[in-house]
Image (cartoon, rainbow, N blue to C red; front, side, top):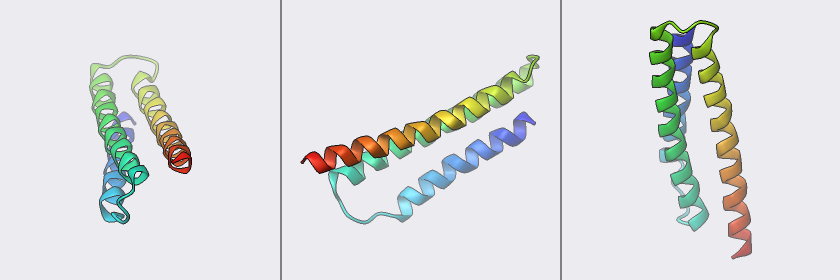
Length: 94
């Protein structure tokens, strides 16, 4: 099960990078900040996928690898949400 979750995490990270590269439009500061946050988050999610595989292969009991994958995914979604709010608030202040 952990391998499937790792593949899903890598797919989400890859999709995030693909969307950021395809949607290059305005050159505002908020857009470039969101792009940076997205690339950083996608890289971190790829590292979580690697950690999931390593933990899964080590054979730790109790579904530890699956827990790492799920916490990593939800942290990624929360991270991108907070990044969007921060970038939007900072843009409106300027």
